[in-house]
Image (cartoon, rainbow, N blue to C red; front, top):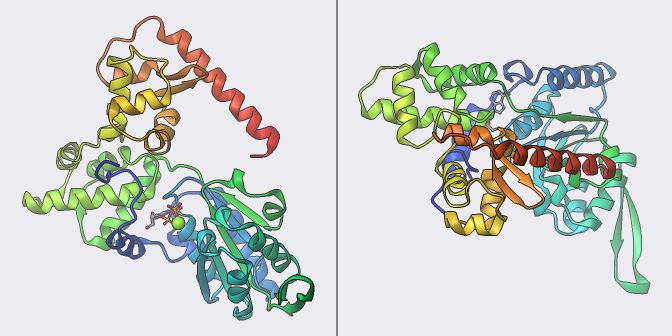
Length: 358
Ligand SMILES: Nc1ncnc2c1ncn2[C@@H]1O[C@H](COP(=O)(O)OP(=O)(O)OP(=O)(O)O)[C@@H](O)[C@H]1O
Ligand SMILES: [Mg+2]
């Protein structure tokens, strides 16, 4: 893969430490997502009044929108200890049994990327969620026996970027599911204000809106861009960040006004200049930009599709009219017919998804 992108995923330890420092600790500080916040707060309030552990909760949505943050908030709002693990870390049912059997009463168990758990572990989890009980299998083959083990009441908080990949029985066992949506520019400005306060940074309103507008509806990206602007301001001896400095800094990092980075733009540029706007197959397009097809498909495409810049037709990828305009080209007449095809294809996949519940 190419060098890490400012708007792509960030897995570096330093990045995680800073993220942790900027994470809101309670529902009150959590910006936006009004619907989810209201519903969740009711769920938590009711269980506090009943003096019981809260119902199991699932958070779903694209990366960086606040799933982990909300999981931690559930524990802190319930005044409960928090245990953290993840789907990929639980390969055997035994791994899960070890975690479950060591939970204390009322504890919150956070399972990140819950869609990536192994099948046997998943089945054990069904029973644990519903009956607060697991069967521990001892021995092998004909001599194997299942020893039932009672669990203390606990709250499972699951997070997934792919709610569609969760098997129905697992999804049904959550008492509440919160779908996180992309944030508006105004909400991202609030996220940035809060972060700037914590980082002791002076930014004026125009500066905040400049950064928010380039953040792809995602708080994680907003915070990351803010830190890059901070570096830029420090080096240039700027005390208060305004729209000019924010814009100069982000231009330097090649994050444009719409939040597109170099990869996004080179995908669109290739589509337009090398394939006359498409349609062109994913692998051919990937070769043209010198990337793996997987990178183009998972890193660049979701945002480009969401922004109506790139379309997926049965015959391949196409550049939509706004992509031509954004890159400074005149929109050729044929584009609109292509666009209709792409919109139709997306609708079809959506209808299929709705049918299968995936
Ligand atoms: N509503 C919000 N208000 C303020 N800050 C937020 C909000 N949502 C997310 N953030 C910030 O964005 C960063 C990323 O959020 P978080 O780690 O919760 O995302 P996630 O949904 O778990 O992402 P992933 O799918 O990659 O695990 C956090 O450091 C947090 O500071
Ligand atoms: Mg997370």
